[in-house]
Image (tube, rainbow, N blue to C red; front, side, top):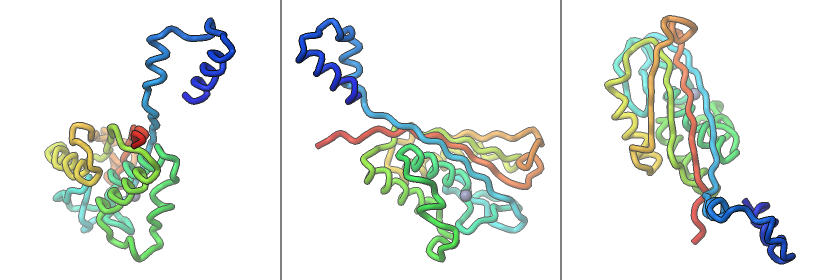
Length: 194
Ligand SMILES: [Zn+2]
């Protein structure tokens, strides 16, 4: 945007008014917020007898995710999407799985810390969209509770958080119930200057 406005200003000073774009487009460009988008992906192996935690919610199941943290694959994908949007690396960089500090940690805390990094970088989330792939159990009954948990941790309206879940029709590692995968995209916008 600054390149455009710089050129426009320079053209104006030189009297090249014919270089200007139509007014509605110019107004749109000048008032356009600075948006950025990020994508995240995560996978965890499932094993018998471990707790299953997804979207900050404990889910009754005979298997859970193998992980250094609580294994919340959905939140990990979301953190990566948010970090990706502000080009701050990934979750492993900020919360390494070799650190005792993060052993068994509630991933909602990782999400809150990720949000601190995003806000410090000068951005605020607009909306996020997440997809879970797992064969069992059915997570639809938990989705609204997950959205509320994420909204609270992120400090944004619950209507800005979408979570979808799908089976893979018994195909792949998710379908064989060997693991769970999650994808997320996050749109962020630059904070208004005070
Ligand atoms: Zn993970």
